[in-house]
Amino acid sequence: MRRLVLATANAHKASEMRAVLSGLGFVIGQRPEGLGEVDEVEDTLQGNALLKARVVAAAAGATAVADDTGLFVDALDGRPGVYSARYAGPGASDAQNVARVLAELEDVAPDRRGAHFRTVIAVAEPDGSARWVEGVLEGRIAPAPRGAHGFGYDVVFIPRDLGGETLAELSAQEKNAISHRGLALRALAELLRT
Ligand code: IMP
Image (tube, rainbow, N blue to C red; front, side, top):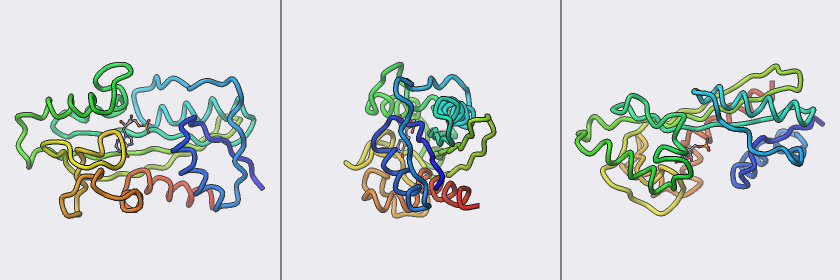
């Protein structure tokens, strides 16, 4: 059985990935002890996902998987994008990041509030070779936060083709069925199967 190490130290993300990967017969190895979070210094999601996967693969001597996600708002020229986690400043809370996006869109009409989430998942080998997949969810930014589920920008993101609910008004299952991360994880499963 192939061994695979997850770059993320985030328990929720790790359990989501573990579920997909163990279903494919991979043994999930321990992240090397003492290896801190890899700084996201690149200016693209692919760059950061590849960087994190390569650092962990080299340290673990095994195949490693890493992901990076961003919210891209059309009227903000794609911001917050790769800086989604810290849009309102270093260590910003989800509520502060959401408040900044809403403030910047204050005068933007409902039909100009298009946005998408994008997740990139990279798979790297100890020799530095790597591949990546992505998942995209199209939608728009709500005028105000709504809903109690999820995290991050879920309270203001209305997926296209649904009934107008925000992601935070959907159950975890409903969100996973359509989300950027769900799509990327299914693409990862397909990549690892081949
Ligand atoms: P990360 O790369 O998964 O750490 O995501 C970066 C930032 O994007 C997070 O801090 C969240 O604010 C936001 N984010 C990522 N995924 C989601 C999601 O599924 N819903 C809402 N916000 C998200």
